[in-house]
Length: 446
Image (tube, rainbow, N blue to C red; front, side):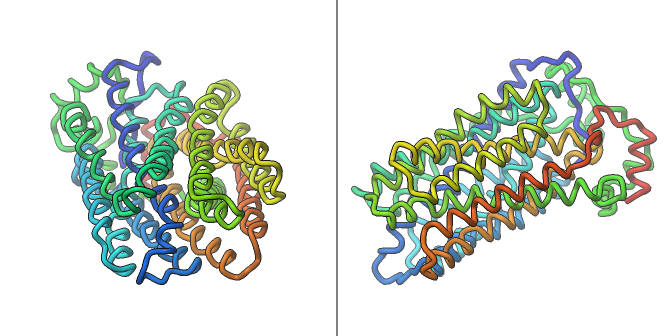
């Protein structure tokens, strides 16, 4: 992706708020589609003729995440070819339709295939929505805006948990996937009308009148125009090499490791928490209530913590939320009183889903403008490997007889190690504006 312009007046216009709401709603749909598997997992394990075990169920849960990994890595390149607006709308349509098709899956194999293909669209939603939101957001509100946008993910999880409490006991698990088509019907009309194309993409295509209109409408202060040499070099894969140049190599590796571990925690909890609670003796309703509390805690707590992050910076808050997630999950392994468990699960939501939003904000602040979108895409893409690993690893742990405590301790270790990666990120990497010479050096480095 190309450099992102930022607001010159440090305020959000009404058009900017509309973009944020559309991207937020798309993330809600994304969150529902991801969390719905955890909500239906106890039912899938009892589905006649499917014969799923904890290990095979974990593998089945990882299949769409493999698709998301591929989709997230391709999203940036494809978005610069077809346009970010079209890419986001296409991803939304793709995964919504494929998710609804899962309701008719006759076997685990067909179900896995449909989930994998749906994952290709899901993987593109988060990086594209993040890039679009960042382009039309004042930099000084970046932590808060990312927190608001990423709150869509736990709200999608909340929706999945609430609908699971009502739909699964009465209509069965298949209707949970049929509901996945509803967001498309609700969001698509607004996205077609109110979602703008990237100013940078428009300029690259020579559509300067449209770009100028967007600059005025959103009160944008565009980055300096790229040189002819940079435009010619833009399609080259070498641009990615700037992330791994000596100056940014160590920070890039830290971001990739932190994202892997953060998504390991998020998808581990969202996929297996209901089943873990069932094995602990809770009813299906009680197990889904824990999933609900986890996502409510993430939604409310993340926005509140973002107020602190905008004052003290992303890095110290990010370290704190990683530690909070690790400590909360460790407390669950001790199986405390039920009230304490609810509090711990709510805090774990902040320490996992909230951590991801602050990590994205730190990534965009650390790199120069020309590398920030690439850094964001790679951080999310490689992080998807953690989401792929989590259902399988926890499924193997539960299936091996090591017990619930071992599952929680694996998540705790991920949180501690993630905090270490963030501590190691070098200070002073953030640069608010990229000078032409610096952008030219990035292209040369590539």
